[in-house]
Length: 137
Image (cartoon, rainbow, N blue to C red; front, top):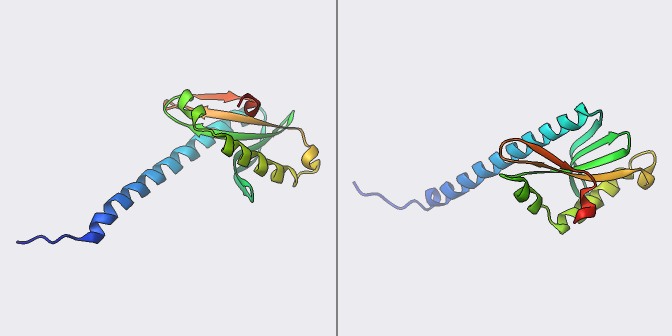
């Protein structure tokens, strides 16, 4: 019995593997966001939106607490150091642009009190939050 090379099968295997990795990453990110949102709401914050998408980009979590609007970028990685390293200045710029767009929909508009937090979730599911994180970059 002679086997023939099937180019479609050769392409399908890496594509399928990439799709599985992408789905796993998406599910892990969604689980991390759920855990972080739960932590904020347990502390009294009100969840306004998850994965809000505007023209400027996507915001993982938008909450309101006693201080005002809280925009939370969630990073999930094997360690907190790897999670923080995954946030680039370019991404911070996109987050800020999207946050301005969202704030414009609120009663106080761009005069709303707001802060930007970075929530990191490590490989064991532990959460560490850096409040006002973007001032540290």
